[in-house]
Image (cartoon, rainbow, N blue to C red):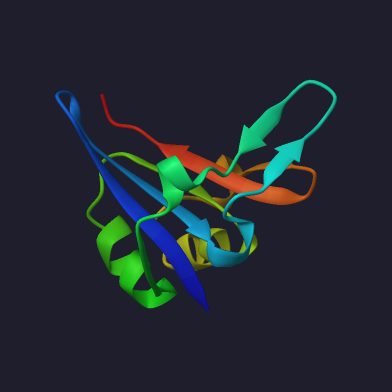
Length: 98
């Protein structure tokens, strides 16, 4: 399984965006919320989930979305399953250390 990963370097630090490859370009909506899995934010390099996990293990700030990447980060104890949100059954999570 492949995911897209993109590194965003900001003055306040780096944010890593990761999404399951099949979600790129989709908009996930509820009555009150809309999440755009935009190419501008998520489309960087297409890599394996294992490669993404190795990067996320040391990350301070990330935004991830998709069943495959979320299952992998929970399995690898990068974030607990209690930190997972779901929008229309699509899991997502964020980690930010300020």
